[in-house]
Amino acid sequence: MSQVQALVLNMFEQGFLFAFLGLGVLITFRFFRFPDLTAEGSYPLGGAVAAALLVAGTNPFLATLGAIFAGAAAGLATALIHTKLRINNIIAGIIVMTALYTINLRVMGKANTPLLNTPTVFGDVAGWFSLSENVMTTIPIAAAMLAIGGLLLVWFFHTDLGLAVRATGQNETMALSLGVDVDRTKMVGLALSNGFIALSGALVAQNHGFADIGMGIGILVTGAAAVLIGEAIFGDRTIAVWVFAAIVGVLLYRLLVALALRLGLEPIDLRLVTALLLLLALAIPRFRRRILR
Amino acid sequence: MILELHRISTTFLRGTANAVKALDQLSLAVAPGEFVTIIGSNGAGKSTLIKSIAGLAPPDEGRDITPLPVYARAAAIGRIAQDPAESTCAVMTIEENLAMAARRGQARGLRLAVDDRARERFRAALAPIGLGLEARLAARVGTLSGGQRQALALLMATISGSRLLLLDEHAASLDPKTAEIVMALTARLVEERGLTTLMVTHNMQDALRWGNRLVMLHAGRVLFDARGAEKAALTVPGLVERFHQVAEDKLAFHR
Image 1: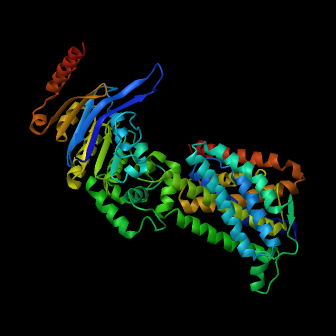
Image 2: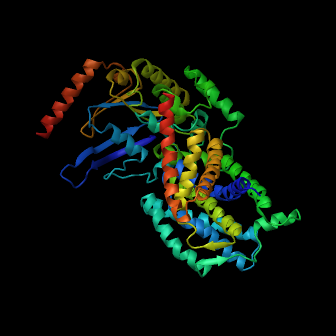
Image 3: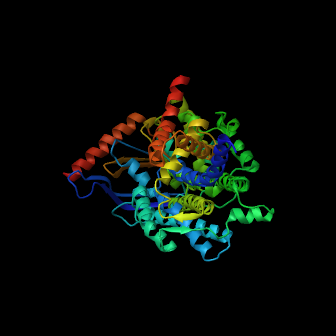
């Protein structure tokens, strides 16, 4: 396999798994317009819950579903702290993120849970077609799951409840005066967002073969960078374009990171690369406007 | 009575040296179908009155008979503020804004918000306004002019089950011609839907021309209240004279 081929395959495999994170961050970062730090805890929570359930012998699909519900519960906790106690949403996210660190350790019972001999959703689905789990089977499986997740999200944001959730983030005064219970819509939005993020953590853990307490560190910036890269390319349009842009953003982000590593940068340099990518994604739209003028 | 306010008081910055009494034991009863125009100088308490009714500025004195949160009151109350950015959502489309308004007071579930039937209904509601919005259902509201946004806000406030319409200088930020269109639309919708309406305005002529009752506020109290034929007979100079006369009487009384 040539280097380019390996690079592209890796981009799609890892990109499709991380794309769920991008979709989750899109909900809070773009629709609710605040960086929800719950993600830093709900991403490893998804990995931890899936890993603990898999080690206990649970079916991979049920284990993944359990991870989604755990993530949604984490988002709900942040929303409850924000709405019922009237605590700033960023602080509420930090509180839950901090609490989740301990919870994740308790769920796994240790800092790292290997998943070497447990079944995974990728292995199970590949098995339906008498194939084995490898990068060539994981890519289409992850792509199919992502297509379903993305379509569900686009559909949701066109329903009555979905419109109310969007309006809550974009214009809370108007939502209130149209009779929207904004406390409830904030709970729905944050639960949905962190459900997607935890799903990403659960899938990545199964793909990498372990869940680790540190897997969530810096994950919000990764998601935000991906959302912003997508937006820099596609601009600010319809919901469907936003969802598609977030997925493309994650893929590009993964590609750029992989390229940086190939160019001789070491893993310890990655955070600097991420920061520069984020800066670039934020700066490009401004330059583009200037050029158009 | 559709709305009764009994001796409500609202104080901002309460307990500080800068405390401002926006409403001072104000009482007002509004009968169904009344279209009340509210005038008064700056700081008379006009906006606070509207916000008290909507639940955005709960009074600190006076019995609040509907201890409902803002969103629950909104089931029966349509409200439009002066700033078009407050009453419509810029990043959502015209049809999405209308679809949200159409669900006022109803459960919001997982039903697609905009279908062909809804679009038909929205077009029919938008066409009589004459601003061409019926052909731009999928356009973002942020691309509309201030007047178009206020016209849309009016439709949104009246398209569903609201019985009370609160207008807080909703035409004040518009140019005279657009303001005229918005005011005519207001009168038509109020008439068609038989809405009870409270309209705050800075414009004395508008206050005289529209509605069937006029209330003048001053220092958080009702200074003057005219309905029916009495209101119809009012003129701008008469209103100004009335204002000075009553204000002086009250001053004399307080002395």
